[in-house]
Length: 248
Ligand SMILES: [Mn+2]
Image 1: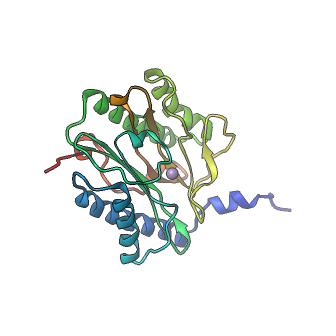
Image 2: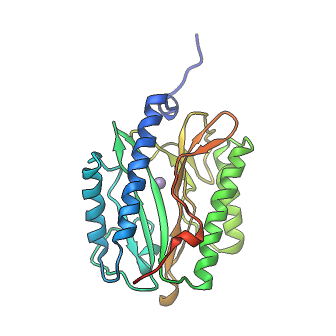
Image 3: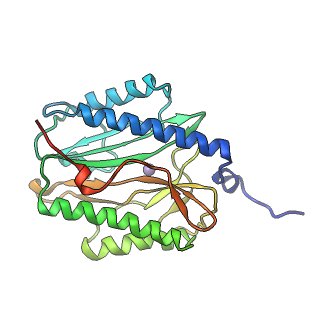
């Protein structure tokens, strides 16, 4: 008798066609991201951008979304699962987008954070630290680490030293026919990440304190876990320089 597997373990490992679908879904999301960044203007509402995201996916032939798009401006970026509303974009706001679509039922997932105008020194530091946390986790995977909790900790310990308790969710999750599937990067996860699965890596910091310091930064890429490392499937820049937008 061969080794018994459970269905979530089988589903985690993508074949070539499934992987191609995820990548296609991601490429479409990247075009949509480009379009909405170009559409930003002072005074536009979150809900207008969210509706534009939906329309754009339909226009690109991908009318099935991974989940309702997250569009957050200003202090709303401190809310991990913000629902886009009537909030208008103001100069100095942080802007967060988190969305994806499905191609042949295979999902994509991406988060980007921008600054509508020059960020404060603290905002720049937070942004670069979130980015650094992502890179630490990716480096851990590249070195061959496959224990989900160890990979989670590589990012969490770094952020934990600088910020108290502001990284409030798991580092990432498997992606497939549903947007959150096994395995999971979490502190208490016992998952071993198999080669061939697609994972998100999405560190974030959220501040709900004083009114003028409210806001959050999350950056999320999708990676394919390979035998010896990983391949980043997200092709949108995420360095601070490109995250700073210039209001007219
Ligand atoms: Mn995600």
